[in-house]
Amino acid sequence: NAGVMQNPRHLVRRRGQEARLRCSPMKGHSHVYWYRQLPEEGLKFMVYLQKENIIDESGMPKERFSAEFPKEGPSILRIQQVVRGDSAAYFCASSPRTDPTDTQYFGPGTRLTVL
Amino acid sequence: AQKITQTQPGMFVQEKEAVTLDCTYDTSDPSYGLFWYKQPSSGEMIFLIYQGSYDQQNATEGRYSLNFQKARKSANLVISASQLGDSAMYFCAMREGNTDKLIFGTGTRLQVFP
Image (cartoon, rainbow over all chains, first blue to last red; front, top):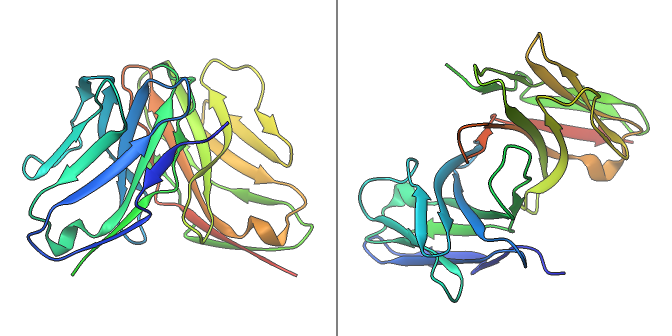
């Protein structure tokens, strides 16, 4: 029973390039969440998606960031024209449904380094 | 205002001893959930324990228990019989009834020494 899968685990990009982060939720989970963790800080919510729908993107920066969760395939967090301040760990979590009692299970994270 | 407050940036505990990691929260929503996650040096986030706002009893999971004091709005994590492998960052998080996202505290770094 595989957990949440994220790839790549480490990603290095130069300023101005694009970063694509992938997340495959746990089997049976249709809700995906993306969080960002800056060094020495807690996780900050970015976006919540269900299949083909963005439900809550209140934590997403207005520019350069986008997310999708297509009908087939993993969820993608895309960062265009990366800057040094985008360097962080990006975590994906999944849950079976939305309810305050539902635990979100996290993937191992993608560590993005922008040179 | 901070929704989740973890006032202990770092804690030390000797192996086999118990340790309490503090967490206070702030919400006006009567329905909410409280979570603790462990982040070892390898970086992954590991779910430890959950407490619902309507739960009558404190949650327990093996060596982990949650000291839930609703009136004080605190949800402290108690780790009994500490092990060297418990050394990690510990994050408290809350999910309010009307939202989908988890709000995290700043974490407590626990070091277990022999």
